[in-house]
Length: 186
Image (tube, rainbow, N blue to C red; front, side, top):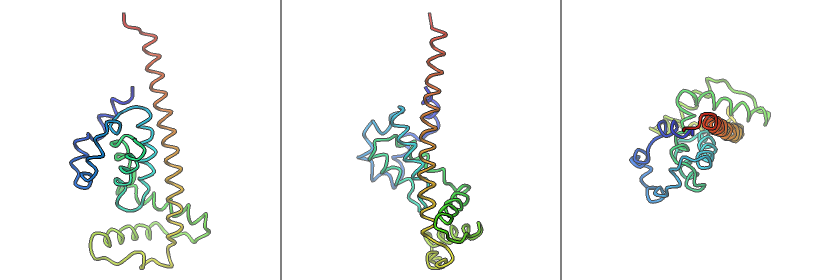
């Protein structure tokens, strides 16, 4: 089964429960179904984790945790997949989201540099006393296009990753079963 490799890559329940913000959810995380490494639990976690990764505000892991609790998905997998958007991938993903939204709504496109400045300004605004990016870029950037594009990308990426995971799991299971059938232990 492919779950042995996944168990090595994903965080343990103890690691997750050590997080300051996730301690609030500790009573809800005792359900053993949230930690199972089976096809159904992991597949739900892929959908939830990838969908949450495209959420633009800090809070992706919290959104993934709430989704995993509601749908009884594997918590480590859902939380781990939120790191699809990380400091290296955020700029291209946000640019692609704005591009998709702008094309659909007929809005003018903005440069990659403007998206980068927006992310930097938003981070400064959240963490200190920087200028409010929602006021600074009003009129030059369409927040509607950005949100629409990210939502579409999130749904499409979630579906593609979920179906790919299901296909890979099935392939690995079938090849493992066929291998056992060809070489039975005596």
